[in-house]
Image (cartoon, rainbow, N blue to C red; front, side, top):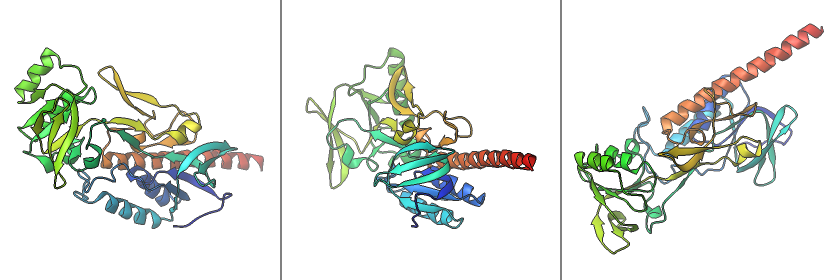
Length: 322
């Protein structure tokens, strides 16, 4: 990877080298823009062995997709720097991004694609299996655990909806209420109609053997056999860089409860601060890899159009001054 001096000014600095950031980088590189991608190498899906529902890359390892994306971006002159962006500030018409080692990079525009952080319920053994036997998205992992015994832990307001969804992939789905309130009569009826069993009591631990999930144990000591566990996570945007520029987050809500945060953007990924953009899971927590990549492409196009407008206005002013 190449490095650069603090004084070098890129057309765009992209913070985050996941599918959204790389897709934006390719789009901007193809538009003959100078682009620097700053990435700390901590993708959200690092624990997952395979990615799914990404056309032409079905079943590929997430790292393989990123490697291919970096190579494609580098083919269009995009440059990369390993590092953690900690804050950003305006410097005249440019934006300066300060990294964790104290160095800084500068861009005429800034795109943040840092994704989100998944907050897991406090259950023994859960984190160890996150991304393998502990899952959250049926479209990402449902096929791989089809017809298995699936336990859905009610950890956010979408638990009933989640249990109903997972019943599409297996006839053996159990909803563990954990810390959630009892379902309404209507919800119980819907769950029963889909063959979903409901178990009361707090889940204490995930039981496993030989690296595979074998069951869920309740606080009272009862163990229920399951082969896959589904949890809803608290999804909080990695928004520190954006917030340092005055870009506010907004609550991620469902059923009147807050279980995360996101960064509001418009159709072209603009934030509330001019020249600052956000795309991918930082702005759309539910977006899968292919959706994040599409958002990055759209953001890249929007940034290039913004730069063209600025350059045209400058050219018009210069011509009028002659």
